[in-house]
Image (cartoon, rainbow, N blue to C red; front, side):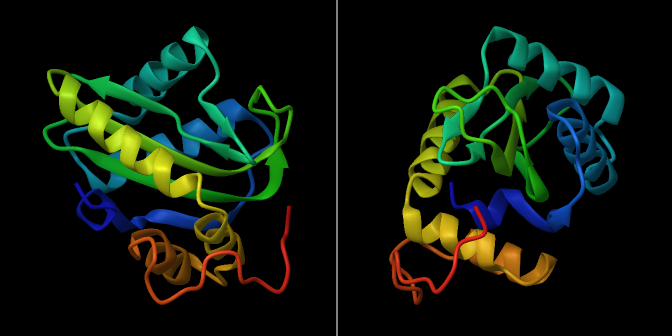
Length: 164
């Protein structure tokens, strides 16, 4: 499943201020609940925090991929936050996180959950993709960079500056 099908522009935010992992997850939950009325932001936050208790969803290189299956979710959905200042997400590489990609899928969607999670992890592992996300000027540019296929018009690794 392509990211443009699950990541709505209104769930994509650049330059978000979040001082903690919990606050980043809270902001993502609020964005998702505002865009998807079947979700309750508080319950979604609880589900994401419960998943984090099993182990950090930070995947390295300043990226976290929080995810959960959720009972009132009817279709896969995502939120993407680029944080103003990196935060501790308990990453195994000890690097602070500035890119938070949140994935929520229906409770019964085990295989789809793993497929989308794998696709997102593959994309976020690409240095050029991460650089494009970090360099996006605003919410719209961040969304456009996020949904652009790997190997698209941007040249992987060709960047002039890195924030983090």
